[in-house]
Image 1 (cartoon, protein in one colour):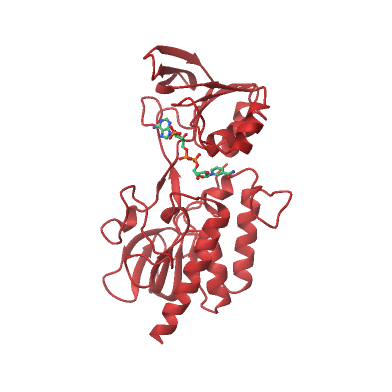
Image 2: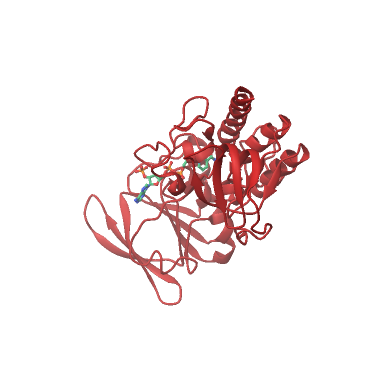
Length: 321
Ligand code: NAP
């Protein structure tokens, strides 16, 4: 299950704390930034947010992060990132930013448990799974509707599940779910997958995976838990009821940028706009990882952005001295 952290449980409210580099978010981007800033002797503070390690920590196995030829668990990789950053002096605080003020320097950040005066800020708040926004989705979340196969797959042992989406996440998580479920039906709104060829090939070899093409979910039904979904074929408009015990939704992500609306430049999808030095529209404020990347969204690209942001923050601080 996702590791939840009590807001501010490691800090008591006191005087604002001065920090040279404040990193908001603890996914691969935030922890890589922490490693680089720590090695520059800047004693960065990382605010973890609700999930240490970010979305990557919810991934069962990461097979495409170089240096680990056998792959390793997402949570394990996150922990290694953390330990490595701490070794050089980064402080990882289990707390969440709730307010930012860029109107004067140093910039001010409030969390549930503390206040910070930060010379530079690296935003690595990541993104959250997008919702279908159909009837029954919210009602049955945790009662059959899930956005994380790694977290909830175990509850579907010997059951049948539907996976919504046609990207890498849908196919990868669908494959993972075949460990538990007797049948995984991928419902995709088009007639071809967006997922990478290697995942498609793996799925095509797995007898538990079936597809329903050109189809969307109209609603999710059940009593105590999910029992059925209503499907609609987008080409024929035919509507059918489909029996299922679970609905796993993987239809992309929404960036976590609510805190920065009207304060930093965002693109039309809500992602933070950065240049190739990870600079946002505010001097000394950088962004890295999925919050500023709707395209690559890989552990390695996020970590690379985090390292770049920390190098740039280091150079910016030198210009202030
Ligand atoms: P994605 O690539 O954006 O795919 C989202 C899927 O959901 C698409 O197939 C899309 O359909 C469908 N979709 C979107 N909105 C929908 C709606 N309202 N109703 C029904 N279907 C909807 O997202 P993702 O799979 O989460 O992947 C995100 C990024 O992470 C990608 O760059 C991916 O390569 C990467 N990733 C990589 C790995 C890996 O390398 N192992 C694993 C996971 C993710 P259409 O195809 O019709 O647009």
